[in-house]
Picture (cartoon, rainbow over the protein chains, first blue to last red):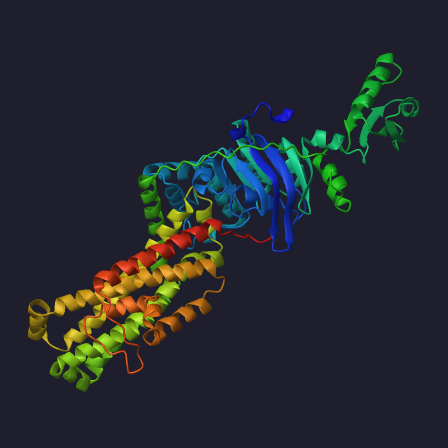
Length: 323
Length: 290
């Protein structure tokens, strides 16, 4: 087992093993090998990249053309086992016609096999968590887009799963609800749940994700923590901004290092941007220079080690090659 | 950047039979589906459809005085006419198309409404879903079409008057005949229901296959004896309490005993339901988009 997952037993992991999915002749995803540990994992990629396909494969809504998926050791072809542990908030409404919000959840929990008393208690708990108590007895058809989204979220958490799969869960939510929902996700992750989230809102994913999976054209381009993924992108040296008092001298010093490929003095001449292929080595060099006392450094900040930059490098600029 | 791969052995599925759980789940499905079947927008058409034979008998009895008198005067002939009406209108048309509408919509309607994943995302065996859905369709169709048969019989008997009916029903074969008609209606719902649920699961556009089945059922009387037995109407026909001629072109076969017909129909239904359960395990939902 890879070192990263050595601390986990197979029934704590989600595993895609050589998974391919074709819709007729159209490629959904191809040869995906992926292991997901507890915490918040974000699927990032443009429309049609294969994010929803991976989520649907995980939940057995579609079946792989090749390969095997295992969610906490359970095959998605066994929904009776899988959905005791998994909650899925898809992109599309699944509200039966004419139901109220409460009845939607209550009936859903009855279908799970809960008793009426348990279903009632859990339905209300989920409704409270998504803050829809006042609207609970109104028909879902009259809900706003954001309310329907929250009700779907309530459906996915109502039976208290240990894996939550959330396809664009922040869509249609106002900023307040987004912040609340993001907080809820963090709390759930802290409680030890797997959260697998896809979204187009990169900065929100950036803030909450423990790791990202970048997908394009059905292929996994990169996966891991944002920092780790960024470091491995050797085609794009990492940019670091340094605010200091003598940027020209500093530029001359750092240029002597093999790892620095470019240094640009900031317009206000109070700092510089450095591009380096080895950020760790650069930081060591910077420490040495600062320790010598020849330079007063105000701030040091990486400019492009966020999800947005990673997305732009790997996908935004023409889709990028496979990693 | 290589993806991190680790193969894990899928956890073996618990194979214990959880009857209590399944029964609760079937009840939950019934609760929702029966409500939808009776009160949903799609229900209105089926109400009108189910009322047609009752209205037909009502018209025959009240609007046409001669017909009403004929029923009184020639009761055996009236019974025979009713037997034809029952088979041609109630079984072959109302129960057939009614079941097609109800049972094909159980899954196909949900796919169209994009609401099937409500069940697909539950901790529910797909076989239990098939069973729950089937029983919901069965409850709906049996209630509706039994009322159709009872209503039609009511107007047939109404024209004859009270004392004659009491004698015929309780001292004659009347009650047995009525119960047989009712049983045939219920068996029709059981058999056609399974067939149409199966068709609804297999075909994106189930209308054409339904029409093929309709044609097969209608030409049943022309088929050779072996093929005759591969139809639902053959078994329902053998249950008819009043003997009917199938016409000069009909192939002659030995009558099947009800003791064979009823179990055959039930076994056929069970086989079709098992195939439907196998199918639904492989059925995918495409959300669209990706």
